[in-house]
Amino acid sequence: MSDLVVLQRSDSASSELLANRLRVPLVENAAHHQGLMLSYVNNRLTLSRPSSRESGTVCVDFNDAKLNFRLTQSLSREAVVKAVGGCVSHQQASLAPPHLIDATAGLGQDAFILAAAGWQVSLVEQSPVVHALLEDGLRRAREAVAVSDINQQLSAPIARQWRMLKQILARLTLCEPGDSAVVLPSLESASVIYLDPMFPGRGKAARVKKNRFLLQQLHGAEATGEGLLPVALKLTAKVVVKRPRLALPLGGLTPASSLTGKTSRFDIYVGTEEQPD
Image (cartoon, rainbow, N blue to C red; front, side, top):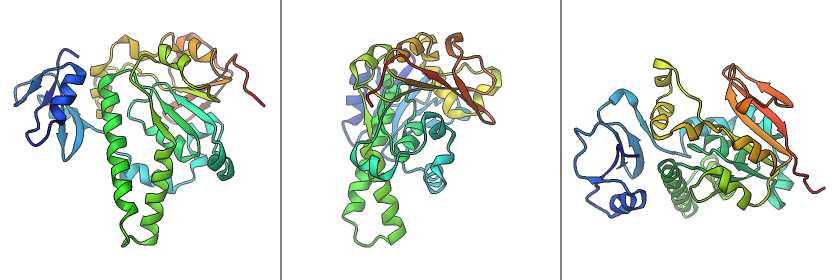
């Protein structure tokens, strides 16, 4: 993270606290900075590369219109939900929802959909920067839900939407940042461990998804997930690995089965940890 800086925000101490936490420089002007920058834009922690506008920006927004649209569709049709075992029944979700660990949380969208499907999800993210983005997104979502709770003028459909978001957020737990291979054994046992490691981009194709392009600048070879699958297989009965559709299996380990879509593939592995009846 030697090329990362935090842009000073004059109206609060948030920027200084973040820079100290990440141990990166705090700057007042990043107009000529060639590397990555974290800044608060409209109260959202945002990652960008000021010298390259085409790189776009990255922030975590759990009230995003695209995510909200996905919630209006049948969650049982979501490939990631199918791969982990389907939606959790309302009764089970309200009593004792099954635990899933997203060991490569990234920007948290898959974890969000899985929580919407009724799973209790623990998010593990090794990058302190991505972890800060996730933490900020969860903070803002929970603050927005708190405001909606006291708003008596919401229409019935909007009120239902906020109640759903509140339920989803209650099923999301962000763990401290750290290497998943180290963190996983310390967590409560899970029915499923989910892995979506970074896949190296190729040339201009890396710029197609701007979020992924910027995130690739934060990570080294450790983000490819090598060595993580064997650890996960010892800790749970089921491991699901998301891969590009035509990519080789992670670590060269052949899955028990796969669920293939247009661009992605979910490889399903049987772990060695026995789950209680």
